[in-house]
Amino acid sequence: MNAMAPTDQTKPRFSPLGTTGMIFEAPGAFDIEHQQRIWAMADAVGTWDGVREAVPGMTNLTVLFATPPRDIDTFGERIIALWNSGISKAVTGKTLDLPIVYGGEGGPHLADVSSLTGLSVEEVVGIHSAPTYTVYAVGSHAGYCYLGGLDPRLFVPRRAVPLLSIPGGSLSIAGAQTGVSASAGPSGWHTIGSADISFFDPTRQPPSLLRPGDSIRFHPEKVLS
Amino acid sequence: MMEILSSSALATIQDAGRHSYYRDGVSRSGVMDGVALALGNALLGNDADAAAVEIPMLPFSVRFDQDLDIAVTGADCSARLDDRALPPNWAITAKAGETLTLGAPRSGCRAYLCVAGGFDVPAVLGSRSTQLREQFGGLEGRMLQKGDRLNGRRAETLLPAGGIGVNLVPLRPTVGDVAEVRVIPAAEYGLFVPEAHQALWSAEWDVTPQSNRAGYRLAGPELRLQAPVELRSHGIVPGVIQVPPGGAPIIQLADAATMGGYPKIGAVIEADLWRLAQARPGAKLRFRQVSFAEALDALGELDAFLSQVRSTTARVRNAAQGWTR
Image 1 (tube, helix red, strand yellow):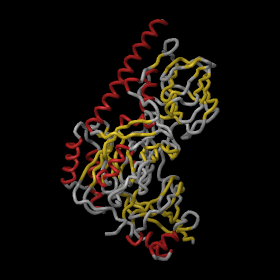
Image 2: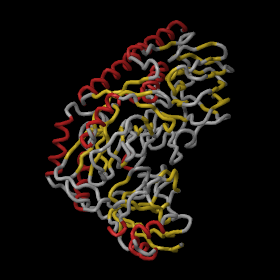
Image 3: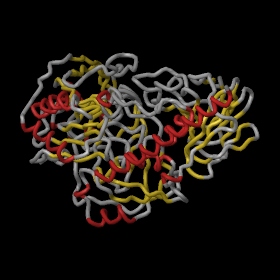
């Protein structure tokens, strides 16, 4: 098993986040079929009594309580039963075509990724910009999209020393994940490019540009060394 | 109207938090000390989530252009209205021309200025809390600065002469520099070595200077996993205690990211987050393990205390109105 791939679990499980919420973690692979089941569960659990929000993560679901259940175990068993029911939601969302400047000032770690993977800069760019990435989840910071679909040849460990801040629009990769920062903030990932895009606008409803099930295609506009 | 005469960095407008946009990646924000906000709003007869100014660095001073009911809660910071000393957790009518000054805290680390009706700034995504990373909410999405002018949303004054206060003793506030907070173990608790479990519950943890509204970095014994784990990114909430590979825990707080991937050893219970808010860098924390049911009981006790304060102070304000009419 790849050292950077998340651990596969064999059984569905739940655990409390204090009394504020709980996490349900799906068993099995990190793939779109499992994620579609999580999306369906989020829609269903979000309507349950006492639930404020049900938020998809990466093949997991975070439930935030408006009123915490008295019996967390019964609540958790109900969620596991919902998973076992196999409900699923295929979403055909919109596709964002995003021009990217790979490397240069906005992509200072492109060379690092090239040496970590043993691929040339051109190969890294070619492999990274080939797939259509699916938005699995939105979170971390406002409007940020967790994407599924990164080619395993580009799996690289997080940086040993995180950067205090990378600008909004930064395209970065780490582990089995890639994404574009929606605003400036700290990052332990490798920044390989940049885009001119606004993923979040608090005056818009919904405020995030993309939702789970939408897609992103990266188009190399320039490759700078 | 009031005008800020002096403010150190980091004072922001906050309410009870932005609660329904987690799925858009929007942090909860809101006050760090929810008890201080609830008490201030109770004393003033405000809605429980009316917006206040959170002041983590003192001194702070503000001058009033017109009579206004105010409350100062949270850290005991030698509050003075002109030359009148205000007791901790006190509400009073500030008169036009008077200046409120908050000094260095004698205990605690965050003071709250609440006003009648709450501060009048627009609600954005259901909250008046300042969201510093994305720069919205509060006053233009930023920290307050000298010269800013703010309004309360209620002009009418309702408080008796001399004001009213509330006694925090029933909540057993932290005395001295060691705060005990209650913790429910989280998903990866069982993946740590036995020495880590023992250290978690027995050590006194230092709140380091790398501590702010996003989270507190703690120093103490190294919390080691039995083996490295790589988790899929999942939701986290204020109170979650993450342990990055270095083994030093971080407690996620109001401005934390909504999702993360470090192993979680536990979560400080909602009813004790206010105690964390008042633990300053250099203070120590002790963790006590509780069950989910005990954590709910703690939340119930806190709610009961706050409703009692709300009803008692309402009676006092009503009586005061009777005397003046």
